[in-house]
Image (cartoon, rainbow, N blue to C red):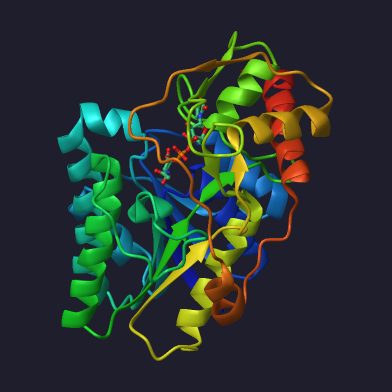
Length: 344
Ligand code: UD1
């Protein structure tokens, strides 16, 4: 019998790519999502790739009664991957309480319900945002946690602490915390990809929407940072590579490959690229020009951050594989597909 994994936020960008990889690895996947920044059509895309339709329920993780009913209906869940969260940094500054409620209560609900329903393992989506501006680059998992620059970032930090405390109090529950750098790109089948509702806040969807003419111009935030060309540096990681790390993390917990109750891994490539380098790489990979303008800094941006992925490479046994060129090409093909289907 297939082992069951519950994926919260499984209709979202990283979640949907992870559902595909879990199904490919032989897991039975149950997806819940409140569809606040996604749509149910994503489930069709997953089915077209894998030939398997995951169980899907529209459910908000803040709805504890709904979660309880779900866990009762789907007995024997071996692990949870918890993606569901609000993630727009700017919005979190405007609506902090919404972010604290959405991102904290959902995790607390899951951690409370797990022991009651015999679920022992949880993978948590964290972020390199917990490092703030690191003193040493590339940044490894032992770098100090810096005061968060936004309520969003704070929710990731607090959630990591909640997990540590909850697992300490109840050693039957284990967790792997994955700190993502900047996930980009789309599935090579072009059936799923990044599709934010409204005006994109993140660089790649804004860039591809500008390249195709939906947006007039991409603003490059800042030209006076202490970097080679003055724009910010990030570690852009292919979303399918990232998704595969979740399958490895689940396997690690289910097969009890570690004696630690909580483990933390950076998921990045180890390579930093500036915003301008990324735009130029996109132009070269796709042959499409991007209309961009350099403007002032965006509030709350970190100057430069990229991963030291050695621990994930050596201990988790995961390594990013795709090139940034191919990844950007996949993002562009996805944008073209959205046009073809009349979605955007
Ligand atoms: C941030 C968080 C990350 C979080 C993500 C969710 C950090 C280091 N990272 O990523 O944890 O998961 O938000 O939304 O805090 N840019 C432009 N023009 C644009 C958009 C972005 O120049 O229109 C630049 C930004 O200034 C930044 C880079 O592109 O330098 C990437 O930005 P974005 O895609 O928004 O991700 P982060 O802010 O790095």
